[in-house]
Length: 192
Image (cartoon, rainbow, N blue to C red; front, side, top):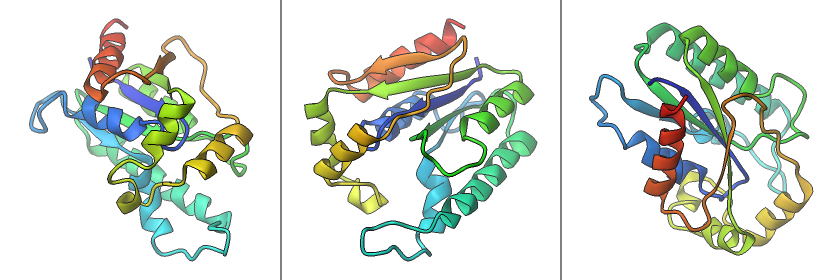
């Protein structure tokens, strides 16, 4: 069954790793493949050409440009992707994000246009495990946070938005291998 799966969680919790396991559960050449659309796919092109201040912050305008890139990716899915393909998106959705349309709204509209369920999944893990994952291999190379204290401060000060809806699913992945978490999420999708 095709779906729009939206993994939401704090930086370093394991969203991308689980999303990769979900996407790899089907061969890339399968008719009903699952495509990973990680938040860095849309943010990295803009962030790569934008300087940061001494605290590592970027201008708010960056997020408008990232949103424009995301819109084009969604448009490409709408116009060009076969209807049997599924997509797994990853995001940190903060209540304090700059004004605009939250990422979940276009994804819900995309699911509606494709006639498939929108499945928001809140991905969480234990604090100690989260701190361990933040310094995991490959994170720095992908421009992800690697400072466990900074991430812990972010978690303590930032509330997430998790869209409500009939297909919402919460999953604590503290003790789950990525493939097991992927299987649980895909079983949930198949049950819809």
